[in-house]
Image (cartoon, rainbow, N blue to C red; front, side):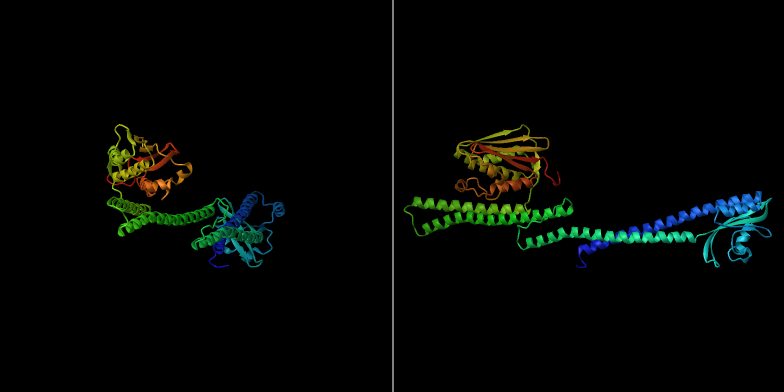
Length: 466
């Protein structure tokens, strides 16, 4: 396993984090237990010392000393100014080995003391409590109690051994869990790594199988979505190239064919020459329009289109667009009607692009309508303007509606080519509406007509000066 592996890194991180919490916690528990135990012993010794001082002042009876020896295991030393009155300590008091001159002077000064001290004879550590016996403000003696703290340390050694065992067991369990967790984490990541490498090689049908609802699952879904989008992009690109080739082939074949006819004089009169020339002119215009629209659509999809934001009079824009297509509609006996709300407010947008949208929709409606009607409607809402173009044309089949804004998509290919359509008009409309922060929807019924509706905000986003 590589040192750089996430299993190792994650495992080490968890172990360091675990130990950084467990070891200080164990030390804290050890310290608390030791301090509590010592405090308990100290309180008992102090309480007993106070009782002995009171008893000595009141009784000084040998029977009481014998009684003390039976009720406590603590060392007791009672003395007066001249001698030791009572002691259950096995060593001589005046040796100074444990009860030093400093401690005696402390008592003679009428002061109490508490102290831990090592006994060089028994090699044990004791906790000493000293209480002076004062009568009429005169020092009459003292009481010294001492308790071995070795028992505490022995108990703590046992406790520490158990703590160490618990830490080792916890480390083993944590290590096992960490390895399990790290492998569970790395396994889907390795799957995703292999999948992305396959995607980079062009195998876009790869799917990562990760069944989880966490961030790993979300990443897997993102990779699957990326693979799907790339696959769609490649399919669309291939389809686009095929469509472009097909769309270019038709006008170019016309141009080449009729140019050859004219070049070799294969016409009978001037009328045929004019007809052939008109066909060449029409196909040239169609070819130029196709190239222009492809270029414009490409710029829009790359986000390099320029907008000229200004205050736009909706009514003026609609009337201008309708006026430009009016002659074309009259030639097909199509009536054009306007249904505009009174006092339509101006909007902050790009008027030229809005007119381009309406022209494309109107020309599309005219191309697919025969001797019918087209109604352009505009009405105001609370936050937006609604503009619709409704025709009584051939309509759009339900299966074509989801793809109506795709490039080169045609409902009737022969009709589109006859009418000079490039199959890019609605794709351009869709992109332009997005640039104007709007939305476009379409409703259609086959044989009865279609309705395109645009929803534009009163003010385009991120515009300055308005």
